[in-house]
Image 1 (cartoon, rainbow, N blue to C red):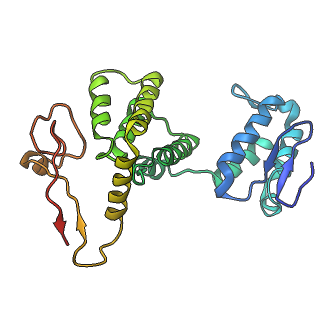
Image 2 (image 1 turned 90 degrees about the vertical axis):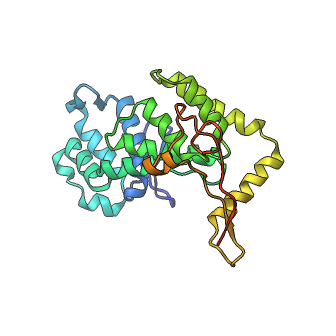
Image 3 (image 1 turned 120 degrees about the horizontal axis):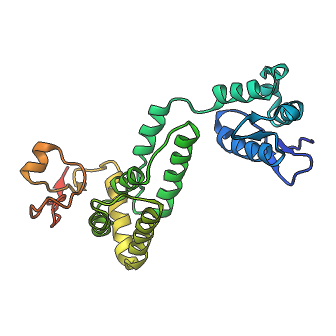
Amino acid sequence: MAENTRSTATIENSESKVEKLNGKTNYLGWSKVMMSEFKQRSYWSNKIGFNKTFEEKAAALILKSVSLKIAAMLPDDEGPTVMWDWLKSEYGLDDLYQIKKELKNVKMTGIDLDGFWEKFNMALALYKSAGGKMNYEDQLDIVLENINSTFYLDVIRKIRLENKNEEIDSKMFLTAKEALKDHFNATPQNIRNKFKENSNMAEMEPESANAVVRQKKLCEWCKKNKRWKIQNSHVKENCFYGDKPGWDKLVRI
């Protein structure tokens, strides 16, 4: 196995080129590629873990796929299982609560749907790599709570209504994902541009006394009970979380 100027490792008898592990920043991708190699070579299986017959080869593969700095610290004389667990403990993600919190708080920038999915999928992958599990119902709930609730309001309501009292599976999740995409594509470009402009204005710090912000108009019940997501059972008019959404007038700062 040779190391090139970009710190990648070319795995013998494989077409894969693996970026060498250099710390927490690339551990997730590195560990996935390495595990794929282990399985293809029969070095590792879900049932028994590392195959004792190939322990030396597995250990050598790990050692050659990390940076020199990490290799110097690796307990390589204790076999691939100890080496693999050590690397995970040092560079893997172990604060499951914090990772889940970050996943639940992935926010959409403006109305950028592709950018949102990129951030959401990465956060979900990190959560799963740390041992977390999440069903499709919870995943969909996070998505609907964190996308732009003004631009996507109608489709959010439609998705919630169609899936009310239903058990969300992968097919329903993908259907909801497509509905969001269709809503974005069906919205005229000039309207999208206005939403982008409004989002940029809301994200900017006020630069003068004439700066304005748009506020959600809530009924007294929502204010009192601190409602924070749209529900089909709410029938108050002129309320952002009701059947007929409302906004307070522009408030001058």
